[in-house]
Image (spheres, rainbow, N blue to C red):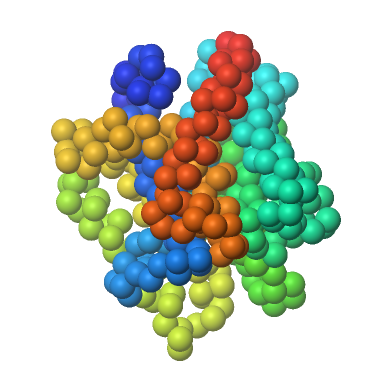
Length: 362
């Protein structure tokens, strides 16, 4: 696997050659965040309307789940490398890296929101502030300009516990670790969906309803060599991906289909078929070199968007909101402001902390 991931490119954002970066993942991140932005434009002041055939593609939930699968995959790859290199995982360093990666840009956004609120431009109620500031947004999500923060909340909850299980089981009982992830994907998350639908009827914006996507990424990373060893024709693999997405977007949307099955599998964009399609697409994107798809994902524009994708995700919500904020959340100005705010957030906030974060990667 080391050879498969040996890759170097020149980052136009980092302005330096970056080694041992898994190819295509920045491009997939770019696609993920662009899907989210396109999806949210439908609820913006412009109320963008897409043709019916485009709606399954421009699906924000699909974009989020691409992000989740990639996240689980990368975290597991990094944990494996640290374990193989050092014989153990430093949980203190892991949690420090997570804090330095997520918190600065996240709380900078909330600081700007606070300034806008005391200026009378926006309003976020006290309860929303509490859940946003404590990274518990997934458990209270009335929507609005903080609605998207549930994904960060869900990820951080997952990564509190996953490294503990990985550290305990990776060397001693890797099969059990695999079984636990399969249990999360096939039993625990579907069971949570059933309980939620039958009892709580809350939004599907929490780790219990969506954690299977992260778990699939983790499972793929643990078994990447086996996945790559399955020799399958490129077009056959693409056919499987398309078939799974069709299953999700047609069968699960049928009005007369079994509601229990729909609940167990999940909704369109974040169902089990979607997550499996994303996992297969991830392998194709990494391994199928010398293709137009691979070249697209690893092009400079896609790497650039993928590099600042976290900041884009954080800032796009207010610029695609239906609030009356003048021209800044109207097309095409909102797209320009998303880019400006994200680039500034990355350069001034993310990048310095990412450099500092490297001290805890050794």
